[in-house]
Amino acid sequence: MPQYHEAVGTFSNVDEKSIYPRFPKVTFGQAVAVGLGAGFIGALGMVITNQVEQAFTNRPGSYVPGRTVSTHLGLSDSFGRHPDILNHVHHFGMGLLAGPVRAFMSYYGIIGPVATFMHTGIRIMMDQMVENTAGVSALPWTWPINEQVIDIVHKGVYGLVTGYICDRIVRGVDWFNK
Image 1 (cartoon, helix red, strand yellow):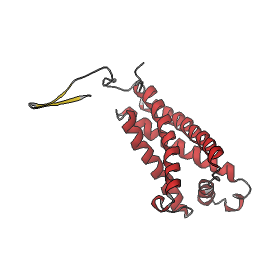
Image 2: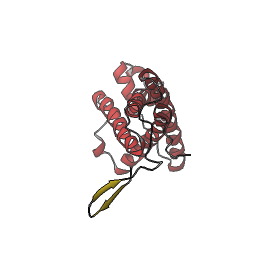
Image 3: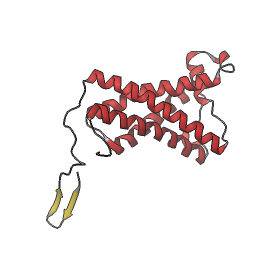
């Protein structure tokens, strides 16, 4: 809601961009399903933008996600044979796990770009938790800055796609007010 500050106090005026439904458009169970689907589509968007970025920058692929999956599942022997498959298992699996978190946020009225920003941080935190418990990654602030930027941008794409879908379906909010 836009706020206006004047000498006598602060006033909030409702406009059409600030109004959103007080109640979700779906049940809690449906929100979980929407979150799973949105998380999958968000992960797909993240993987596609990753491939496009690598085509332009010639940056080699990271196999930390695949090593994480193989370590946690005890598949260390098969990592060398299927690194790309294991990478995708990690990306889509984490996307499916984090998607319902964003759907819960929409369900309870935490929506829009600020919610997407928060959810992007949650997604990065989830990745770091599983990667560091597997012992295959360093803490992100020790990475080269360009790698930090790349990771945040790709997770941001995931957050934007997942957040828009969840807000649109669960809460009935169109970010662009068409």
